[in-house]
Image 1: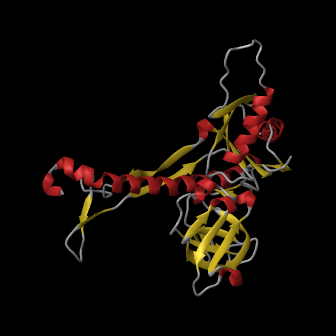
Image 2: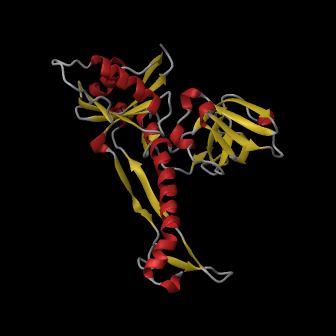
Length: 316
């Protein structure tokens, strides 16, 4: 392949490199949203047909988190993260049932896991030191009430996020406005983006279509949208769908304040050796390529963010 020249090398490796980049971006995107948070909460566990089944609660299910996650290694821990219930590799995802399936092993899920336990990626949390090994995600920032970036939010009101309980109903324009009000009281006077799940976006788009009125009789009409835009007390509010947002939540944040910081974006080049991309294998003939990234989300105004909780997209 290499002897065939540059074109041969590119055609033979482009899909491998593309897949590596997409895989890293997938994990980074999850961490930008839910870093230092669980990926979902267990609703039930069972042993069926020789396989172990974990059902994620509807409120904490996000299709984008689990899409293509077969063979991913995850941990299931108690709600306080202190007790490790199970470490296993996912064998199948059943999205329609919000279910993770594990091949039957030596640690039966049904015997170890209970409703209320949480799911995280393997190694994301250390119980011995009670620390996360992930960046601080947007959800943590939006709901902060304790120490964030070394500042104690319990002592400074502008370092506290805002949590608005939707109350077990569908998210509506009024609910969005009501949730924004406390942030406006803390200085939010700029455009915000509200990230919602695909299921929530569907109900919001339906409401928007109901509010829309045509003042003429057109021969044809276009409907549907990639985003919904409102104006509130703060200014412009963009509602955007994100497949990795949990179905029972939505997150509002000031768009211009969020930054990615760190030493390196995703790269294949060896740190400190800008021209070196391939490493020779120490124990066999061949080369390997590694992908690196050292970055984090930084949003220095939790008081201008809002976490909406208790959204039920099936409610009438």
